[in-house]
Image (cartoon, rainbow, N blue to C red; front, side):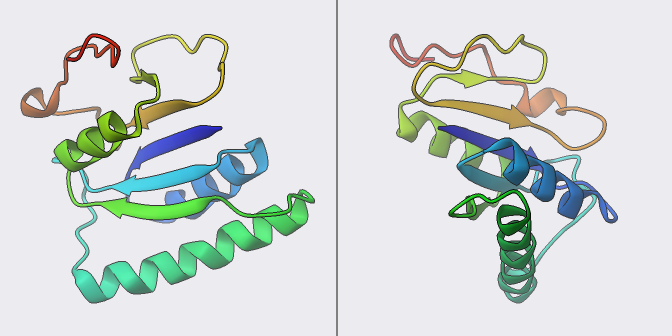
Length: 131
């Protein structure tokens, strides 16, 4: 299974990302509010967006004959996304790394347009040895 941690882009880009990730078979999508994300959502807007995004992934899953849409969640920050990823115990891939063959489960962490800010630059992490 593949988990996608995606920084929130501005405009209408995120629905397309959700659609394509669903069609590609991503099992879990975590929307991340990063330091460079221009989209800021309060609690009510978050709930509304998650409901809207769930409809998009359900339609995409139906379109590609997938039995279930991916799980959708939100992370309030890049640090929260990294903590979630570390807790999952699966190997991860940052945007500047090359995707190798996915064995059992992997995670891909992508930022918003413009990349990650200097304060959110994580070190390369190997979960088997800790970060």
